Length: 383
Image (cartoon, rainbow, N blue to C red; front, side):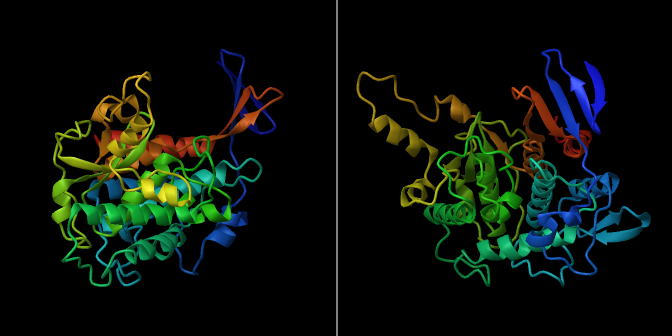
């Protein structure tokens, strides 16, 4: 593969006569609409100044999962609060710090992706306004989804600890998420639509969510509400929510961490005694809302009911490749959730050239994706 530089962009000539162009923007992010309009800044807000500092913060979080203090990137003898902020700054309302950190990290990833992949206006990732992003997560997501929970002020649900209630809450969170973003007929080709940050600013940028982004945001929302048995579930080309049947008997809002039931996450859903929820149903119509919160098997029942006797054999979740024959990937730990979010980062900007044969990518976003995945690998979370 040959390499050349043109107009400040790094070009790599592939074997199929395609140019892979890597963009490396240097404009300060405070010139972007994300910094100026979508985030609220305070004078003493912390900034992450470079990749080394980001890696240190990420590594410390992965190693401790629910830490309250992290090593400072500025020096080994100093300490720095984690990305949830100081306890006196935010009222967590029973939402665990670990869950909040997952939300903030996913928001960081989405912010970095949108900042560096715009078709015309692209900016440097650093300095990264971590406190402003944390504030966005608290004010526009956590506080909102917690208010969807009955008696959320004291975190009690004494009369509604059952499976229908879990489904009702999954449906409520999912509806809230889809109402935030733009409604589009087909979101399968929607780019850069895979994060909580897109959920929070999507309506202002005419963006929607893909199925991964919708499922991830719903699971984070349910965990913030205290449904800690809620699991991000990934299959061949789809994403949805799973939850343990026993989790329906747990207190909603108690802030406890989920207990991992199996050393393997690629396991049969039936063996894990799990129920499932469809949440990645796009649209704001009543029909779309009705389909959310249902078992995935209901999707097949609906399709099979419309088939004639001469049609192909009926498909179920146990026989469908889309759902990996009931053997989906269960992201049932913090590292696995973040690994899925990082792996879903889309570094492409657009196709360029007279025939669209050249491919345009964000170099700093590739570096961020690579470095964070290496951390997860080195910590033995991707074995």
